[in-house]
Image (tube, rainbow, N blue to C red):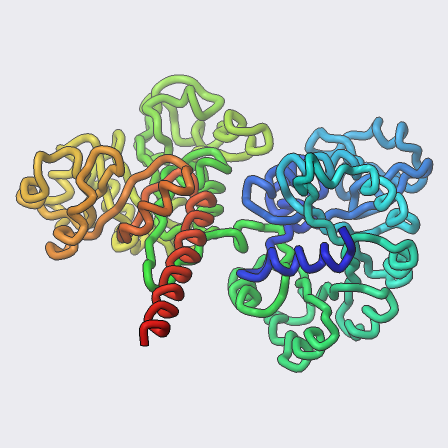
Amino acid sequence: MLRQQRLNKLVNRASEKPLCIAHRGASGHKLENTLEAFAYAASLHAEMWEIDVRLTLDGVCVVSHDDNLMHTAGIDANISAMTFAELQSHRLYNGEQVPTFEQVLALAVETECGLYIELKGESAGVEVLRILEQQPEQNNGIEIGINIGIGSFIPEWVAELDKLNCPYPLSVLVRVGDCPFEQAEKAKADMIHLCWERASDTPHEFLTPELIAKAQSLNLPIVIWHEERASEIEKLLTMPVIGICSDLPELITGYRPDDSNPIELVLHRGANDVAPENTEISAVIGYRMGAKVIELDLNTSSDGELMVIHDLTADRTTSLQGPIESLSSEQLKQCDAGSWFAPSFSQQRVSRFSDFLSLAQQFDGELYVELKQADVDQVIQQALACNALSRCFFWSFNSEYLEQISQRYPDAKLMKRRQDFDSLSALIAAGKPTIIEYDYLIDDLNEFSQCRDAGIKVMLRYPGQDIEKWVELIGLQPDSVNIDHPFAFARAYEKWLSQTKGQKQECRLKQEQTV
C-alpha cells in the first residue's frame, strides 16, 4: 500500500470523530511506554498508541521516552550507552523490562490498535522501517495491517524517511512558537502534530479558522497534543483534527449521547470491566467516560463506618478475610482491594460511602446506592451531610430498608425492580418509586410509556456486551441503562446513531424522489 493510501485510510478512520491516541499508552493509569500501559489503552478503546522509540548501543530499537532510566526505573543509566543485553538486566518500576519495538508492534497487531511512532533517537526511524518491512500486510488477500504514523520534533529525521520512500504517513511535531507549515516543509511531512498543551489554559483557541484553512489547503491533517482537561477535549472533538493524544484515553473514547436519545449510563459497581469493582478508580474512570451514575454497595464495618464493598465478607475482593462487620474501617481502608483484578491495582482500598459522595460532587454525577448491611438513618444522614441526597437513589434486597426510607425520608429517591412484582400497577400501588429497573430478558419492555405516563423513569438492565443486542435495546429509548461494559455500550450507541441517521437520510431521499 502506498503512503498516500495509508494516509487516506487514517483520515477516513477519523471522519466521524478524531482518533484517540493513547499518549505513551494509557500513561495516566500505568507506567508510560510499557506493555502494560499499551494493553490498558486497548481496553479503554484507544484507536492508536503514541510510542517513543530509540536505539540501544548495539542498535536494538526499544520503546522509551527518555534515554535515561531514572524516570521509569530509578536508575541513572542511559539506554544509548548500553547494549540490549545490559538493558534487559534492569527492571522498570512495574516489574517489566524496557520493551522492544517488535514487542509493542506484536501487541498492537494482536489488539488491532494503530501505532503513532515518535522518533527519539537518530537512526531509530531507519530501524523502525526495517522492522515494519518484515511484517506481512495481507493474509489470503485480506488486509491485516494496522494504522501506522511516524514523526519527530526533528524535521531532518522525518525528511530522511521521506528520502527512503517511507510507505507510512509522516508527521512533524511542532513546538509552541514554531510555524507548523515551515516545519512540515522541512520534514516533507504528511501531517502536523501541534504540541501546544502548555501554550495556555485553553490551547484550542490557537486552532484558528485561518490555521485550519491553511492546513486543509496544503492537505496537512492535524494531530493534537496530549490533553487531559475534559473541557478542552470536548472543544477539540468538534474540530477538524484527525487525532487527539491523551494520557487518559477514556476522556476521548467514552460515551456522548445524542439529544434525540439521551440515555444515561449507570455503571454497575463502577467501570468494573476495566478496574476493580466498587473502588474509587472504577468510579473515576466511569465518570470520565461519560457515566451519569455509579452503582455501589454498602456494608458496615465493625466500628460502624459505611464502607463501599459488595460482598458481606472481604475474602473475594480484598487481601483480608472474614465478615465486613468483623473488620474495622481502618483495616478496610488499608487493605489491598485491587490485586485480585490485576497486580497494578494493588493500591486501591475499600472506600467509605462519604468518599464516593465526594466523588459524585466532584464529577457532578450521581450514585445508585444498594444497601447490603447498613443503617438506613446513617446512610441518609451521610448523604444529607454532604448535600448529596438529590444525587442518590436507593435500593436493597432487604425490603425493610426500602420501607424505612419510604416512610422516614419521602424526599429520597427509590428504585424498584419490575421483576419483583406481578404487574406494573401492583408495583406502583406498593409505593411509586422514582425509577423502575427492567431486566431485558424477563420483563415486559413494552411498558416504558406506561411508566413515563406515571412520572417514573425507566432503567434497563443488560449485563452483556453484545453490540447488536445493545443496538436493539438502545432503540427502545430507556431513560437509563444499568451496565457492566460501558465502552462496548458507547460503540453500540455510535452504531445505533449512525444507522438511525442513515435511515432518516434514506427516507428523505425517497420522499424527494416521490415528489
